[in-house]
Picture 1 (cartoon, rainbow, N blue to C red):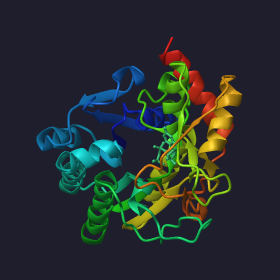
Picture 2: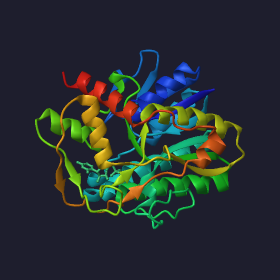
Picture 3: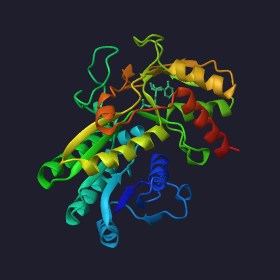
Picture 4: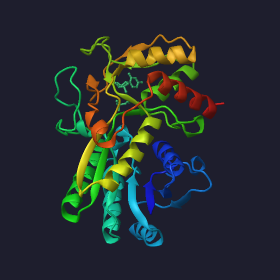
Length: 324
Ligand code: UDP
C-alpha cells in the first residue's frame, strides 16, 4: 500500500510528504524538480525524477510499486506566466493529469486526491461578504485556473466512467511554513513579496484601496501550509473510505484578512515599520475571496487551526533562513 505523491519536492508537496511519512504511510515521490527541491525530502523518501509528460516513466512507477492511491500536486502555478504561455500550461497541467489518470486506470488504482485551487472560481458573482461554497459556479479568469478546472473535469469524468474516487482540494491562499527549511522559495505571493520589498529597504505596494471592503483593500483567506498538509492526510483517508465519485472541497479558514491587515501583521512580527504605497488595482482581482469551510469539516473532519500570526511568523522564520 504505497501512495504516489506527484510534486512532492515542492513547497506544499514537501509538507504533505513529511506529514504522510510521519503518519506511517509508504510513499514514493514523483517530481521533475523544475521548481521542486530534492533536499526538501528526507533521505528515506524515494524520489523518481521525471516529468508527468513522459508516460512510459509514469507507468513504470506504477509497475514497480504497489500504488494504492495518488496525491497529485505537480503543476505549474504562476498566474502571470499562464497568461503569457497558455499552451505550455495546458501541456503541463492538463497533459500531466491526463497521463497520470491513464496510468492509474491501466493499473487499477482508485484513490485520487487532486490539488485544485480557488482560482477555479475566478471572480465569483457572490453578494459582498458572502462565502464561496463548492456550489459557487466555476468560471476561471486566467489559464492557470482554467487548467486546474480541466483537471477537475477530467477526474470527475473518470470517476463516472471508471469508478475512481476523487477529492479535489480547492486551496485558498496558502502561506507559512511547517518548519523553516520547508518555506516557499519563490516570490510570487503577497507575504514573500512584502518580505522581499522590506529586505531591499523598499515599501510594499497595496494593489488598490478603493474596494468596497472595510478598509478598501482586497480580502483573501490565508491558510497555513501545515494546516493544508493536515487536510491532505484527511483527504487520503476520505477517498480510501469513499464510494466511487468526485467531490470538490474548499480548503481555507473561513476567515478573511485584508491586504492592510496582512501588512500590519508583518510589521508586528518583523518589527520593521511599514508605510505601504497605494498602487492601482491589479487586473482580475476580486474584492473578497473567502471559503465556506463547512464541507471540509463535514467530510474530512478537518478545519484549520493556525492563525494569521502563525502564518506570518513561520514564513518570516523561513525567509530569514533562506536569506542569510
Ligand atoms: N497584493 C498586493 N500587493 C502585492 C501582491 C499582492 O496588494 O504586491 C494583493 C493582491 O491584490 C491580492 C492579495 O494581495 O488581493 C493576495 O495576492 P496573491 O498574489 O498573493 O494571491 P491571489 O489572491 O492573487 O491568488
